Length: 416
Ligand SMILES: Cc1ncc(COP(=O)(O)O)c(C=O)c1O
Ligand SMILES: N[C@@H](CCCC[NH3+])C(=O)O
Image (cartoon, rainbow, N blue to C red; front, side, top):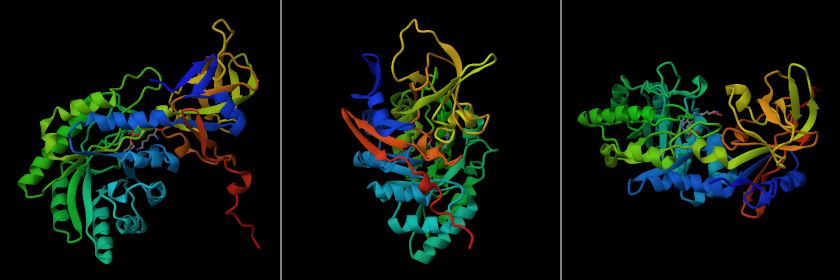
């Protein structure tokens, strides 16, 4: 099911013409489909059947408060990695008691705020963090619920920058030594051990690495039980991949079904932290062609979106489809373009070697831009960040206006 389709030769987002949105709100512009976001969230939620579970949507994938609010209304929990993301969840009406706090570098002030609002659980990534949390909780007269993020040394078979479950990665505590850390945590007066956490990487297209990690986590839970440490929940992280080009990742239902074939899971509440699989294909980034620059070696289509708007192609050599907003005739002449932005970096490209039929002023849509798109945007080259628009049937809502130039240096001061 795709909510971005051509109708009478025009690209639509649900029931609204993309060209009409671009003409009203300008470009570059992120356009989200509410129906897609909600369908993907439900796909995970429904997959659990009667298994006790909580979906903690990973805020870093796409964090506009209007979108977080949609998930909050569905009863979602949230996975956060900073106090900034926590404040977003709260501003969006999210329930703090359904928030898990991941990340290797939690500051004291972040811990304090999270304890103050009563989050569900801290996913501890090091012994130093455990000690710090115990101290902060003691100062506040509270007990902090924790799970420890274990590093199971499983190869997620994904891009090295987004693989997190190998010994060489900075994340979590080695599963072979974590038992002692759990025993220490059990003895801490202001720590309440609740779960085990594991997240091995992102854009996984096979279930096998998840199953390997799950086995190791369940074995650990058994060993801990023998030593008197009671585990109530397992947080299996996020990481399920999506189709950008020709990948064939399992659907959420297939993935969860395979995981739940392990009947030992029934003894626990299961948390998951999906981000990309919910958000990636919920949005397009729409951009206008500024110039065409034909050449002997290469032809360039220079568009008004750049690596500051969508960094995935530059950073991971990620491939995302680029399609025309006004459909072109099947026999129209095409050229092979590198689709690039206006930024002064050779690495500023959105797509390479794309056969497209383009002229100056045309609109293009970069697909699968909903996850790690706007959230990774920057102001490099003093470029205001794009606006975000959400389509709901035939309704269009601007959920974030375009930044103004003045805002970009508003916090700066001249010397006296
Ligand atoms: C701890 C943690 N949870 C969840 C996610 C979300 O991952 P994904 O967007 O691949 O589902 C990430 C990012 O990889 C993460 O680091
Ligand atoms: N930013 C990455 C995913 C990173 C996941 C972070 N835990 C991407 O765009 O593919």
